[in-house]
Amino acid sequence: MMVTMIAKYGKEKIELVDLPASSTSIGQVKELLRDRTGIMPRRQKMIGLKSKNGASVSDETMLSDLKAKKSSDDASSAVAMVHQFILMGTPEEQIFVDPGEKSDLPDVLDDFNFDFNAGSEEWIEHKAKEENLQKFTEHTTVHIITPPRISTDNKCKPLLVLDLDHTLLDFSAKTLRDSELSTSDIGSPNDSAANQLKRPYMDEFLMWAYKYYDLVVWSQTSWKWLEIKLTELGMISHPGYKICFVLDKTSMFKIVSSTRSGKKIEHSVKPLQIIWSKFPFWGSHNTVHLDDLSRNFALNLTNGLKCTAYHRKKKKKRNVTDGCGEGDTELLGIGRFLELLATSEQNFNDIDFCYWKDYVNGTKRLWPKKK
Image (cartoon, rainbow, N blue to C red; front, side):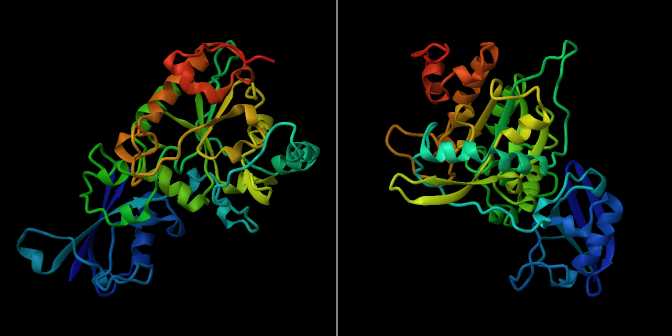
């Protein structure tokens, strides 16, 4: 039997025709795709293929062992089979870097209720260790995707640092694997598999924020999954906004904090100093860090904007919709606050972000906080 493999790669459809089913493996298909796309086989992610026996598809899987989704409609259907799938990955010449191949990566813990405030014992200890942070920063490399927007009079956009999981999306690899979409729908507005992972109004929020801010993504996940998320959700190639660069969990710095019960916990945080040291036109005066985990703000308390953690299957409580599936509208409010903040021409250090809802609904005016 001859097989046709159809890969949906971004807006491109790649067809590999007349492949012998019993003598062609997935690994060989990846080699053919490398010739067409420039993506190394080890970086290729093939979403949507299933084996007949339910086992995971590997490089050793033969095409004859794939579960059929669609046969051709012509007279040769008895000897021809078509398999459609999503291809994700970055060509070698465009690759940022894969920190996941490094050893000794920082651990990412579940959320805790941390008692961490400026002036606390932990804060003083961390300030005393700024030399360690400086060394960590010097060894962190940033790979530019889209250059920051600097005007002719040398002015820059403020910076918005964005977390991904439970801030902008609720990711599920199973949802992608189980997708039965045709290749024409993948990556389009009808791509229900990707769209259901996004927090409601995610794209609208990012397009609105991009008018006023340069965008950076900083995720607590490994590079492998971060690349899949950004590619599958169209965030790298979206026409309405651009990402300056991406950082993963290898750029997170370890500190020790206390829970409210007094227990000491070592965890990793996102030190904005890494970005500021490499891009001096950004600093605490013009940076917002949006995250659902307040512990990630530990070294930059005044720049943290905490959102409600988003879960697609979370059951909403009475009169509460933020963070709950389709009823969640929090990004719309945050987008409005970011607009007010960017157009206020104030030092961000002087604004208390915890009152962002009050600024949006008008119960508080966006004036500097009292000293």
